[in-house]
Amino acid sequence: MNLSFYFSSPFLLSMLTMANVAAAAGGLLYIASISMKTVIPLRIAAIGSAFFFLSSGILARSFPPIFLYGILLPLNTYRLYQMIELIKKVRTATSSDLSMNWLQPFMTRRRYRKGDVLFRFYWKTVYPHIGTAIRYLNFTSRGRQWIANLHSNVFRAERELSLSGPQTGNVRHRLHEVSFSTIGR
Figure 1 (cartoon, rainbow, N blue to C red):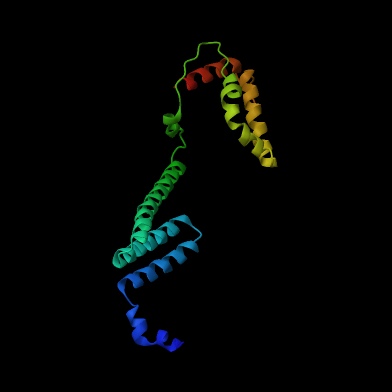
Figure 2: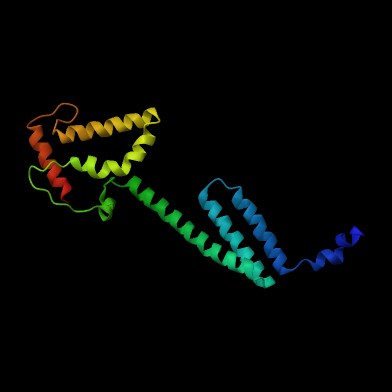
């Protein structure tokens, strides 16, 4: 078998088609996307790779790459859009007054009467959903500190104890007013 035929210029030039050039560019961008450490450049390289592989499939009239990269191109584009929007939201949140108004769409309005004990809500409703997370937090010293602070605050609120530090005036009365005025909003 004569291998020199496969390395001759006429044979190599015969493989130089637009489909193969586009596939080579897609391959290079794919390798670049795999080697990236940050998400935004990775998505941009993946979009370029999908575009060139899709072009290669169209030029070669091959259905599998058209199907695959026809799905990956808009998916990567959408994920890039989501990441950019998330970065914008984080920048806005960190530069603003740190208000919690963005949580309102996720809140449920509840009505309480004077004298209702509100923090049983934590043990009956919240704790069953975060119990697994609490168990994982318990693995680290920082997590145990976080749990201790959470339970300390729940304990104080259940018993209407004063907050940490010096307090002036009728603290029990103020705590009661604060809990009812903020929860109903």
